[in-house]
Image 1 (cartoon, one colour):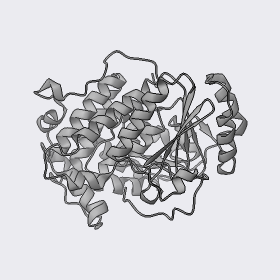
Image 2 (cartoon, one colour):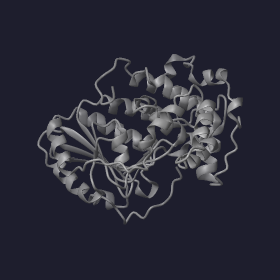
Image 3 (spheres, one colour):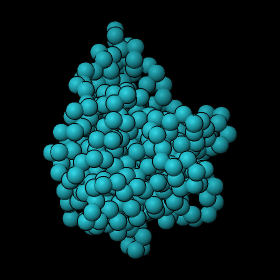
Image 4 (spheres, helix red, strand yellow):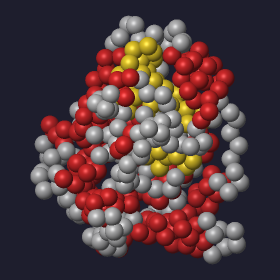
Length: 389
């Protein structure tokens, strides 16, 4: 999830004038007819989700939900990408100060809860990268539109972290054991695969995306059937390439249903030796390079998420995230950021270095409720209406 520069002059969407004025706002809010538009506006930084972005999104989503003149919300990214996820530099810079990112993390999880339980239709228009926390602004939307240039992944285990922002709820609700596969390996799904997997609702060719946006902005109400009908006019049928990972679900289900990470890898290795399974080797290599601690946390979190509500998952994920940042059992998160985006040597030194050295009693420390109940994520426990059930 390295943060790299992309020329701001090359954009997928024509940007409003306030965006063109030196990109002053990290999120550009617009009120157009009955629509409310939010544009993630840091294209030179892959529209990463900083504390300021989270605060601004949260304030506007709340405002628009109460706005009698606004019937639905659209979110998109300026430039060539939707969002690369969290601002990892800020986490690394605060690594020596306890809970330096507490406020930002807390706000992000509240935002995720609000999106999952939002009372008006919301639409994500996604072109380019939608990764990690950035994907949490796409997947739970009532309508999420992707193009052939879109790709999505949850690569957190590669930096010593875990799929959060509601992904321990969403991943186990994908077909079979695809959620475990995506969460552990960080593999990408592209374009139509994102829709076929259930992580988006519609596929629209990129050349039609701006026209779709214009049509949506002219809708006179927030009627879901009307919105769906407009999107359907521009969307294409889904045909998955025979080489797609989604056509390998029988192998994925067999291997990633095992009880432990060690057993999953052993089973996956056995499958890799069979004819036609050359695709497994690079995935296996990536899996073995991930943080052993993060892999075990991720598998347990996704498995628990199968029977948890969105509120329970977010509260659990908040505990995990804060305890990882506090280096309760490992400093892998900061080591992963160092290796990926600070020094960029791509050679993290995980501690513990192997799966057999990560024990269940250590994991219990990461998952257990805080001693101070006031630190828990204070979101409603009662399950509301949202797309994933």
